[in-house]
Length: 68
Image 1 (tube, one colour):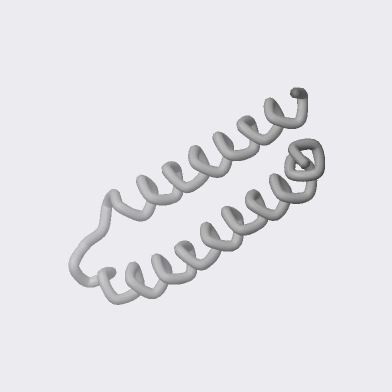
Image 2: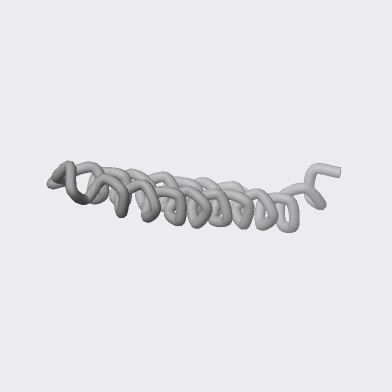
């Protein structure tokens, strides 16, 4: 049961992290910065996908053996 608690804490931190990054990239953007913003956003999206993939792997490694 404690494994599930740590899983939800980890997932919550990932979501909070992604929200903070999205908000910071979304504010104070002038039209001249749009091209750089798009490039940065692609890098951030890949970073977030990697984080979520790691969360799924951690869940699979720690929770799945207890379910089976």
